[in-house]
Structure formats: C-alpha cells, structure tokens
Length: 124
Image (cartoon, rainbow, N blue to C red):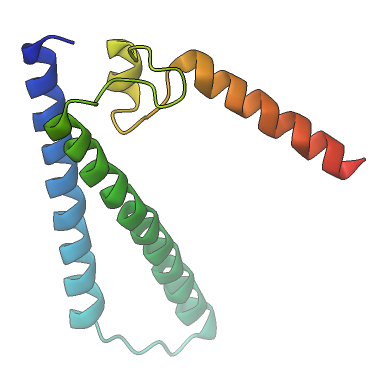
C-alpha cells in the first residue's frame, strides 16, 4: 500500500474515532440533562425502549473504538492492510468498506463458511 493510502486510512480511522467519541459524549449529556416525568406508562415504556436502544448502539461503538485503535496501531507498526491469516495484502476497496478489518476477503469468506458449517453441525 502506498503512503498516500496509509495516510488516507489514518485520517479516516481518526475521524471515525472522533465522531464516535463525540456521539458518546452527546448521549451522556442528553441522558443526564433530561429528567422527564411520564404520566402515561406507554410513553415511559417508549422512552425506556429508546434509551435501551441508544445504550446498545453506544456499546457497539465502544467495541468499535477498540478496533479502530488497534487499526491505527497496525498503521503505526506497518502491518495495516496485511491479512492476519494468509499474510497477503488486503485490497484497498475492502479496507474502504471495512477499515478495521484484519482479514482479506478470501480468508474472511472462508472463516464465515467455516462458522456456517459449525452452526449447521451444532443444530443437527
């Protein structure tokens, strides 16, 4: 991968990280500033459901933060864009679609096929 691509992904990953952190901060602000009293139990249930959904999204983003930081570390150590399974280069289009990936499309497809077979075997 050429240096221009590396810098593109470093900036893209940093921007992703900053956006997620900003959204998390806004969520915390919204949840601590908002004290609403609901007379209707259905309204309260809807608000609690929305809150639980938002918290699940933030939890997924928390896990994504870890992956983003690991990807930036791989950029720093020179292993970014190299498949952890086969050692081949991961294509730039794949990295653009999933910048935190550690597997090339061939190895990821094989991994998913193996998981599918294990799931079928377990359900038999």
